[in-house]
Amino acid sequence: MTEKTNSYDFEGATCAVPLVHDEKIVMGHGSGGRMSLDLIRNAFYPSFKNDILGAGDDAGVFDVAQGRMAMSTDGHVVAPLFFPGGDIGSLAVCGTVNDLAVMGAVPRYITVGFVLEEGLPMQTLAKVIDSMKRVAAESGVQVVAGDTKVVQKGNADGLYITVAGVGMIPAGVNISGNNAQVGDAVIVSGTIGDHGIAVLAARGDLGVEVDLESDVAPLNGMIAEMMQASNQIHVMRDPTRGGVATTLNEIAGQSGVTIELDQEALPYHPAVQGACEILGFDGLNIANEGKILTFVAQEDAEKVLATMRAHEYGKDATIIGRVTEKNEKGGRVVLKTLLGTHRIVEMLRGEMLPRIC
Image (cartoon, rainbow, N blue to C red; front, side, top):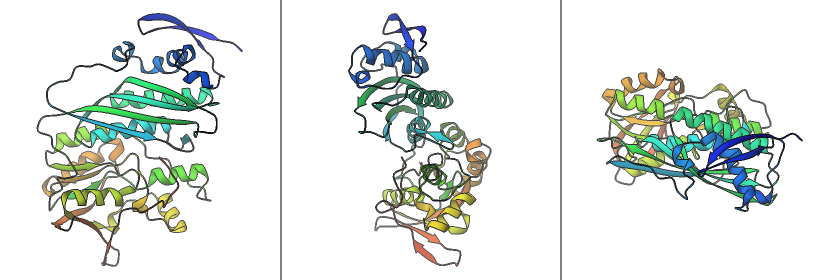
């Protein structure tokens, strides 16, 4: 086995680190000792290197401007680790970036926690880290701290990732699930359910082949353009686990409003629509990882819609409904069907689909 050696400046010292490409994770990598340090130097630091991380302290320290800051954290578990259109690494970074961006915040810094299973190939870890590096660069965020633990073989699905992030909210921005207003248009940024069906197909759980990629994507760039186009955006939310149905019910409850959806307007990729018809799934309950729901005043709806459609991640954006009235009973979501009737759209109950994120 041939080893290639590079030198990296880490924790104030220059050190030689062996790059062993066919090595596997062993319990010693989680010991906190020399092997742990070598793993950090070899696998993580070269991809995420910056001055804050390079200080080598127990927490990243950075200056912030006066104002409001948003903070979010999320854990990510998915099988398989790699799926059409993404992987656990891109999923983890995008999840936290999007959670900050839908609050109107500009994502700045993230921290990353890894739980590695004994026996995980180093090549697999390297591919995940490279994916995270790419998405972090696209999002404009820096990894400023992290942690790594190793568990015995059989006690994890190869790799789990937890990401926490912070972002600054510009002055005058107040976007919240509490702010839905009667008359607001409800816009979804693209086709619904792509991520859930893509992951299930990659896992072999569907029993049929589908030509579909996950929609996992960092949305902060598009959101920034939307906010420049209108100061009448009241709510934004990314409909991940539980899908559009669960997310809209949460917003309806927070704001105490009735939200009416138009079934004819709901956008689905043909592969998602086909899978739902064959297997009896409701597409409104299927997870998304690169879509947002936006509530905007009716007078600015077309302007925001055009801005979204001009962006790579919003080219299929569609107005799917509206806020019709205040609801003192706590809010509800209704669907106007193709037949012109109405039915209640409920929050996902239980486990309709196997775990996908």
